Each structure stands twice: as structure tokens, then as C-alpha cells.
Amino acid sequence: MTGDHISSSVSVEFDTIVKAFGPVQVLHGVSFALAPGRVYGLLGENGAGKSTLMKILAGYEQPSSGTLHINGAAQSFGSSRDAEAQGIVLIHQEFNLAEDLSVAQNIFLGHEKKRGLLLDDAAMDREAAAALAQVGLKIDPRTKVRRLIVAEKQLVEIAKAVARRARLLIMDEPTATLTPGETERLFKLIAQLRADGVTIVYISHKLDEVERVTDDVIVMRDGRFVTRSLTADVTRQQMANLMVGRELADLYPPRDAVVRDVAPAMKVHGFSVPGWAQDVGFEVRPGEILGFAGLVGAGRTELFEGLMGLRPASGQVEMLGRTVPNGKGWRNPRDAAKHGFSYLSEDRKGKGLHVHFGLRQNLTLMALERYATPWLQPAAERAALAEAVKDYGIRTGDLDARASSLSGGNQQKLALAKVLQPQPKVVVLDEPTRGVDVGAKRDIYFLIQRLAREGLAVIVVSSELMELIGLCHRVAVMRAGRLVTTLDAEHLTEEELIAHATGTAHEHTSA
Ligand SMILES: Nc1ncnc2c1ncn2[C@@H]1O[C@H](COP(=O)(O)OP(=O)(O)OP(=O)(O)O)[C@@H](O)[C@H]1O
Ligand SMILES: [Mg+2]
Image 1: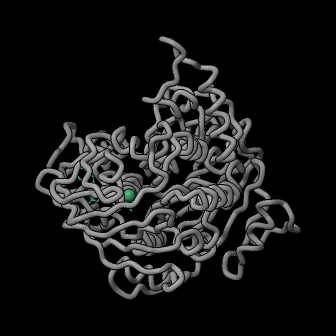
Image 2: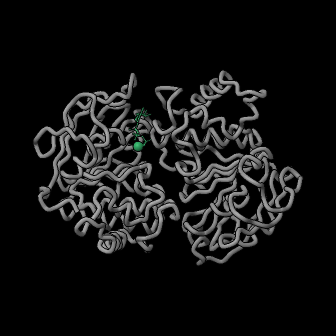
């Protein structure tokens, strides 16, 4: 799409790159170089400046000072189009798709193909289909992006970059929303691109992936370059320690015993969400951490969206010993929150946060009753925000900032703080550590344990099996819309969980 004048390889040198947003300086003179045809893992804690540096490389942001050299020549990109003209393409961490346009229109946005004066839709659909095939996404290119699930949106982002024939491709947390199968396919694509001489920068908090796909790792901390190494020369534990700048202790908290002779906080019976979940039943007790495992499409998210009143549903729900009226779950998230049930969406940007609102407005949205007497009390809201920033370790230079200015992992922490604001009795956390760095992950696990100790019933939906095994008391497994078994997490293995999720195990129920 971008023509054949692009040189076949791209080398990069960052020379003392500084970036400030208003008074907040986030990059403090970063210098390092990238050689062509290698795969670089870029590591660092949430807020370390990885995305910001890569946005500078891809023309989305301009440095406050310092110089970017591409193939030996100083460059200042005024826009992403300038960078694309040099073959540099960024796949965004927070998707950058136009929801109301089709997949093909998104792939060609700003690079539309024309025949004479008219758009050549047929050619664009055809090329879009080819790019989708390369990333293994089987959808009609004319589908509106709004209709896609997050994993599909991620694959469209990757297809968009592939269609632009990048020579330097930056992938910012590309697998956060992908299934293991989709991830494998992406790794094959990376290997193929690398063999073609494409330079790749791979940002991920999944250190096992970094270990597998990268040649070199580069570590940033607090807006500074810290070190680089051949990937083969460092262990995962060393990578983690370099990121946080200290020795990290055990990732998971010790498992507490659950009090068995108290009434369940929530009982769900015969619950169905048409098209997604059939006849699901489970209970969760105060103090218990209950995991939900399953493949993408098993219906976990849709089940909880049904309970929240976000989808049509039927069945019986009992909350704190009382039947939820009309047996259909709650009417909407606000109604659910009022009755002690709260849900952290896996779709942080779509359903979790209003990224263009302030941190404060986001935090208190679900619990406005607490801050309105009857008028909103900005001072109380502000105090709540200051407390949440401290409790959840949200890194922000500015309490009056918009949610969109937070780094990806810090948005996740804000979303978590938001769903806990209404002080629920049962909370569902759907992919609570997506995009979160190892240190912060550990903080979130210990936080979940603290909440459980305080009597909250916590449901964790996760595609990271080790997270479910390490953190939960019991793990419910869903497959094709049914809850097939509930297993004791204590002696559970990953293999066993996979066998149940894919339907290759004998099923029994432990609890
Ligand atoms: N537009 C902006 N306005 C103000 N501050 C910003 C803006 N963009 C980023 N920041 C700040 O810059 C710092 C670095 O953010 P960045 O997104 O680069 O981190 P990151 O290393 O990509 O983290 P993560 O692993 O969470 O994605 C953060 O403290 C963030 O709040
Ligand atoms: Mg980032």
C-alpha cells in the first residue's frame, strides 16, 4: 500500500529522547538503537514509558527534545503518516479502530484505494480479506468493527499493519486479548516477518512470550533506558527483577481456608443467556475466590453480562439470601451495584472506563450515591480518588488527568478501583490483570486476597490458567455455554484445566 520506495530494512537510534506532557516529564533522555531484522522485547513496568517512546517512533507523538535517527538520518515525524512512509507502523495497545466503519474500511483508513475518483471497494475488500487470512481471522471484511469481540479487534489491528507492508512493526501488547491458538499464529507471522527482514518491537508483560519470540530484550524503568541483553542470556525472573528494580517475591498470596458453614453470598441456578450460556448454576461464599476458566467463546463473559442486565437472560439468582426480583438477573449495572454485585469488564476501553472523562468521574460513576448529598461533593470525590491512587498504586502525574492519559496497566487498576467503589458483596473481575506488569499483578493478587479476607466473594474470570490455579479456591470450567465442572484449585494442574475446557477429560465435581 505504501509503495516500493521503502528501503528494505529499517534501523533506529533514539538519542536522548525526552518527552513531557505539560508539567509531567515521562521520558528522561532515552538512548538506544535497534538493528534491522531483529525482534526486540521492550520491557518495563506500567507507566515506564514504553508506549510513549514507541508512539514517538511511529509519529503519533513528538519528542520534547532529543533526536530520532532512521537509517542514520535524523527524522522528525509530524504524524503517523510520515512514519508509515518510512515503513514504521505501530499496532496500538488501546485499539485505534473506527467502530462504525467496516473492517476493510478500517484497514485502509487514510490509504483508501481509488479507481479514478471513486473508492475501489472491491479491491479493498479483496486485499483486506488477504490480510485477515494472514492473521487467521475468518470474518467478512465488510463487517462493522462495532460487532467484533475484543480478540477480533486485536487481529484487525494486526491485519491493518500487515496490509501497510511495515518494515518496522511495533506490537504493543498484541496478545493481551488473544487465545493460545491465535497467539501461536501470531508467533508464526512474527517469524515470517523477521525472515523477511522486518524489525519488530514486541511489548508484553507476558514474559514467557518475550522469552519465546524475541532476540533481544530492552528494559525501561521510570522513563529511562536501564539495560539490554540477548534474550537467551536472561531468565524470566531476571527480566522481572530488572523491570521492577528489585527482587520480586512470590507472585501469589498463600491460600486462606474458606469458611464452609456460612451461607453463600450468591446462588445462581438454571441461568441462561440465549445463544451463550445454558442452565448454569454456581454458588460463591463470602471470603471465597472462585475462578471461571474456559476457552474464548465458552460464554463466561456473556454469562456475567446476562447477570448484570446487559443481555437478555433467564434463571434464578439469589443474593445474600434474597431472590433477585423477576429471576432475570439485574436490570442494569447500576441496579446490580446497588444490590451488592459489581463487574469489571474485560473490555476496559469499551465498557470499563470512559477514557475521555477524568479519573475522578470514572472512579465514582458506579457509586454516585455515596458522593451526592444530594449534590455531588467534589471534595469527597477527590479524597476518594487520592485514596484509590494510593491503595491501587495507580501511577499518574496528575489527579485531574483524563483516564486516557494513564498507561494501559494503570487504566486497568483504575477500572478495578471503580468496580470496588460501590462496596459490593460479590464482585466479578473479568481478566483483572490484562496488560498489568508483574509487580502490579502481584499487588492485584494480594489485593484480591485482602478483599476476600474482608468477606467479599470474588469471582475471577481469566484466560491465564496459572492465575486461576495460583489465586482461587475453586475453579469452574465452562465449555460451549455450559458449566461443565467445578474443581478444587489446591492440587489442580494446567493440563487438567485445559482437558476440561476442551472436553477431553472425565468430569466430576469437587464442591
Ligand atoms: N497524553 C498523555 N498525557 C499525560 N500523561 C501521559 C500521556 N500519555 C502517557 N502519559 C504518562 O506517561 C507515562 C508513561 O506512559 P506509557 O503509556 O508510555 O507507559 P507504558 O510503559 O506503555 O505502560 P503500560 O505497561 O501500562 O502500557 C505514564 O505515567 C502516563 O500516565
Ligand atoms: Mg503501554
